[in-house]
Length: 81
Image (cartoon, rainbow, N blue to C red):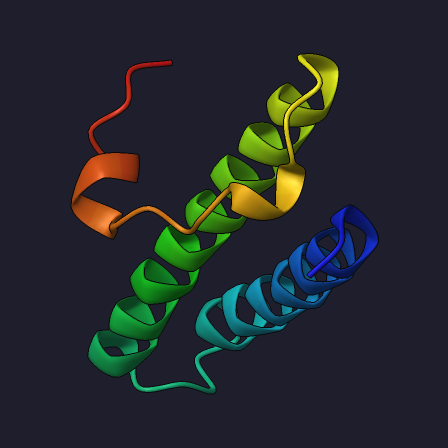
């Protein structure tokens, strides 16, 4: 997977997130299941952003970006901003 592939995936997920949020706001979605879906989507987005940062850091320091890997949600979600 390339950086462009990851960015495209992020774009698709952001679009899906907007649609889901709009459905929730309009009352067109079951709130509980939609909130669970939204939470899962946010975690996957965080993982994609983390993967992209790893790849860019590896490239910056002359390492192989293809050695970057998706980290577990428990690790990505515990990062501090």
